[in-house]
Amino acid sequence: MRFDTQRINSEFRQGPGLEPGLDINRENIAQIRGLLGAQSSAPAPFEIETHVHRVGEEGTDPQVICYRKTNRAMQPCLLWMHGGGYVLGDAEDLRAKQLAFDLDITVASVEYRLAPEHPFPAGLDDCWQALNWLSTNADTLGIDAGRLAIGGASAGAGLAAGLALKSRDEQGPDLALQLLLYPMLDNLHASESGKIETHPVWSRATSFSAWEMYLNGVPGEAAPIYAAAARCTDVGGVAPAYICVGTEDLFYGEDVDYARRLTAAGVPCELAVYPGLYHAADVYFPEARISQRLMASVRMALADALA
Image 1 (cartoon, rainbow, N blue to C red):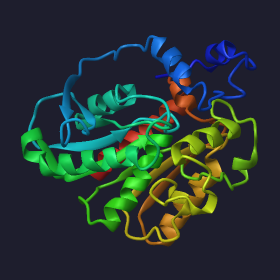
Image 2 (image 1 turned 180 degrees about the horizontal axis):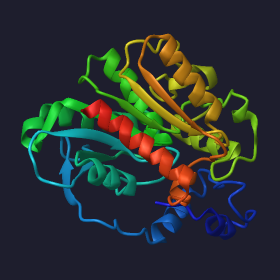
Image 3 (image 1 turned 180 degrees about the vertical axis):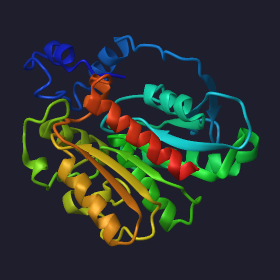
């Protein structure tokens, strides 16, 4: 879903335009979700199969929505985590549908629990449960457990990075790729780009507020590595990675640094940096040439990893 920040901020009498980002906090998060939910999201301009599954034990199980273009067996699969700063968004994600259609793969989008009602590790636990469910039930689902990737955008990419670390540490399923679109990795925003206050769409103040809700406080350097992958000092042995980010993104510095550390640890990592691109600009302006270049790079990285 595209966030109409101008309209939402005006509802809360904040400054106009995209510059300040969403002004979110514990007091208004429910109202902002309501406003976002009231915005009509454009239907996918193509036919896509949709299958809704419940994972795990009744009452505690996350919902997983599987999108696929064709009903052929042994499809590669991408476990997808939507964006929204760990506090917004849902699994009905257009990008998940688009990747399933463009690459003719199964994309399983997780309806993970959101903060502040469900702070870390609830959302990650849901994604971990979904990942193991996909691997265990691959034959029934018609997917190839040997061609399984994880990915997401923004906070969803942060979840994917944490999930890759958890899968490494707990001997989870083998992963072909962690697909990280401008991932939200650093609760401290300690990089040079992270010190700038006025990034469009997702500002520093907005991000700190989202992190406070997700981490249920401000643990700083003590934040768990599965919540904030930037806090991890040993990133060796994780799945190969693809990371993309724009130079005008709050996350630019932390994403480039994470890619550098993955490479230094011997993890195959492709880094794509887009000059002048701000956070989620490809969602706001999908027809822009630079947005199309970004998505072409994403599709190619995923297609290569899933063979």
